[in-house]
Amino acid sequence: MTTIFRRERHSVTDLKIHLVCVTKYRKSVFTSDSLNLIEKSFKEVAEKMDFQVIEFNGEGNHVHALIEYPPKLSISQIVNALKGVSSRRYGQAGYKKPHQESLWSPSYFAISVGGVPLEILKEYIKNQEKPS
Image (cartoon, rainbow, N blue to C red; front, top):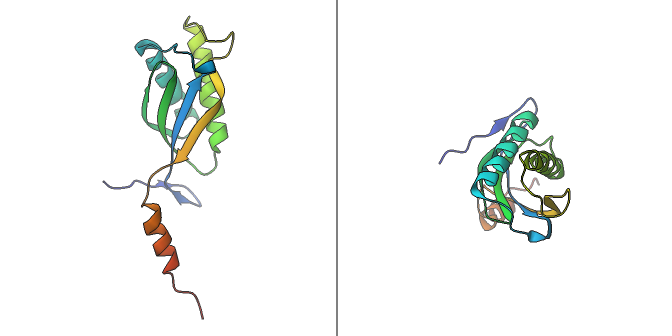
């Protein structure tokens, strides 16, 4: 598989995270249709903010997203926008939120993904030639 790098004026990057967002109190509220709405909302936000939702799926009380993003965005900016817009659209579509106006728990899980295994990278860095 060929890695496609994000090329911008002063940077070349390949930043990807696995993001997990859970519903308020982990209540199971999502259906297949409402997950489709959440995915559509995530992709609209991504297009506006210049990042990409590569993969998306979910269960009754949480969603998973694989996201590629530029270095100018922080993970918290991305998460806040995704949760805000999707929660609003979810309510506008007539779905019941688990707790009054909150669809999402305020917390989230994010982990960086991609690239070479950590041990190989550590070995590569160790083997760099130090200047004399």
